[in-house]
Image (cartoon, rainbow, N blue to C red; front, side, top):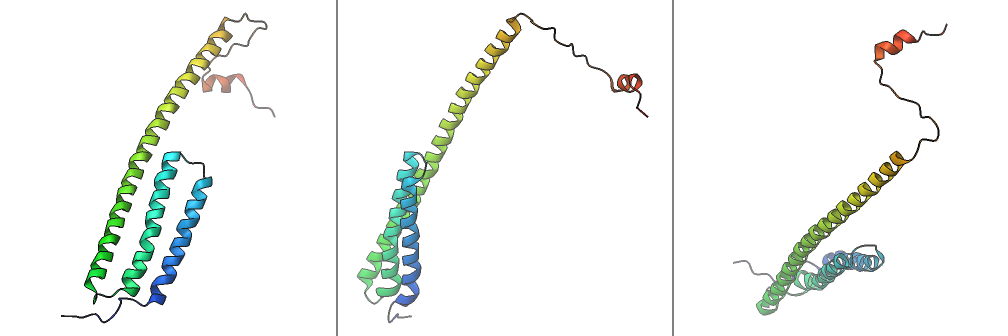
Length: 156
């Protein structure tokens, strides 16, 4: 049986990427406050980012500090990390459902707006047709391409 003497990885290998990711996530949360997004999307994504930030110290502790020689701490940390990852997957599913809801609402709003525009255009066209003709309008006729060629001769 393999017995581990210490942590899986040295602290210097685990800490910098986790700190960098925490800074990126904090910047994302700050940028999300100013972004022009629906409030429901902002809340869900902020919660997801906070959960991701909570996982980072556990990852550092699990891989660089705690050792399998202390099974209680080791297993408890793994259980908490897995729980947070499950919460993150759940938040991602909620985000997907929310995006589908927002898309459906936008599509319905667009349909209503297009119907309103169509009605307005129909009214404008009907009003234009009812107006008395002030000036004679030229009549347009469809011609065959061969007729056009026969009537006009090229200039030389």
